[in-house]
Length: 194
Image 1 (cartoon, rainbow, N blue to C red):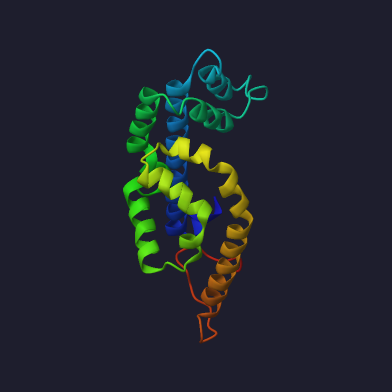
Image 2 (cartoon, rainbow, N blue to C red; image 1 turned 60 degrees about the vertical axis):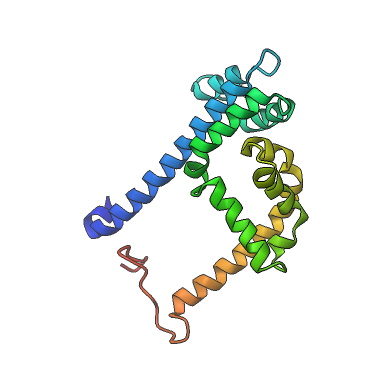
């Protein structure tokens, strides 16, 4: 299309970004599929729900898989073999899904607590309870996500608001070239004016 004709560099950049997003979504799908197999039993029938989500003609009637996975993870939380398998899946997929390993996540949280104990993340009981679950107690991420979903969801509106404000400030700085008032080019992609 238009980008390829006018800016092949931009077209390559956009294609690469889309490929990375697709790979992340495929990793999430693979993680959910294997987690469904680990947690499937006759009562929750997770494997059947997951298969329905994949079939085009049954997708509409199928329930969302993520809440079912979280519920099953909590129900099977005392099953050491299932938790060990979920923990193994974390080792395979955590970095592909999140962009960093569990160890990196834990280390960065511990470092933030040490260096900036007054930071809102260090002060948040909800976040620190999640960090304890994942990093100190070494539980599988799916179990921690399920166990701490409600308290973390209550934080989400404030975090989104803070991120939007930070994004507005950054965009303002980038658009004005910080103090000079000159627009800053951000790469090979043309703006609306070409």
